[in-house]
Image 1 (cartoon, helix red, strand yellow):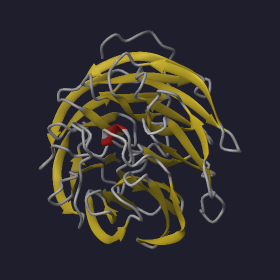
Image 2: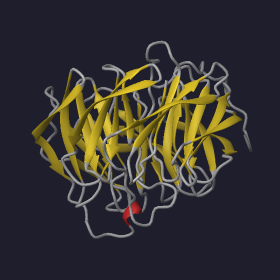
Image 3: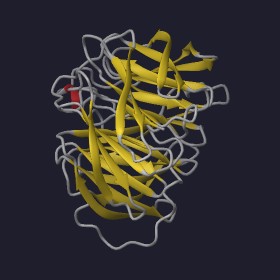
Image 4: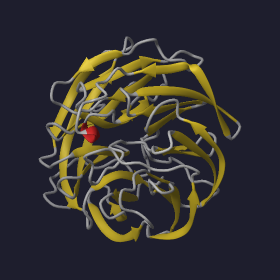
Length: 374
């Protein structure tokens, strides 16, 4: 990794942060696996990879979602321009995939590195791009027509839609280009009390909905405006905060979310790179994908996230790094590069250093978006 700085001793890498967007926190059936979504407009698929003990990936199968992928106008590497397009539900052993071109969500049961399609359900809006899960509650973020969220509950291996859990975001539907003016992610805080939505350049806001015990959202969100920040992807921090990427200044920040849904920024660290949009956590290490610089930046979070220490960056071997996922033991990081559809494989040292160990090609992969790992 380039420009590594001296740091305090690291926490064990095996303390992978639970609830990190796009990251499966447990192994399914004792099998190490990685899943990637092709997002193909002619037929979306989930490509399954077996992970060997040395971290290398080998393709194990490909599964049709029963829907089509999509592409937002203006996008090059990130056709969905979101984080969390493929989400693993570890409590129920389910995988949720968005079909942006079909306005639907596919539900798979996970059996090691094999998948079984259980359901294709309407997303409750137009162009779904992100899925969040907390216990028995699931929310889908729809990106177009002003944006919306739709809530569901998990019943066995299916989702049940709750019509009353639909909320419009009220974004400008005509703002262009689409890929920077659509919402970026929906996700829960670790305690499940709040549902967070980022709006990117369409308002530069972080919307926070309160969630009651049934899973229903508040009628309206508490809105925090972050001028020119372009808030994009995030992962939980503690019970009620998030680590958030800001594509405007190309930075990683820490946001504390208060009981009333208001937020306070407690740390800021610039990446010095371009198109800093995605983030994944491994213990107290955070890695951001910088699509415009073809690299991944590393940070260490200390003092409950109030201190973010840059650790340098590592180049990806392929252009347009977007979504990333970490193995459950924290030893490996997998970065999906969207331009050509290749997964770059890295080993992770305790000091945050990344070492390239190989690549895996995604069939029909250009424009792919969404990755999870066990």
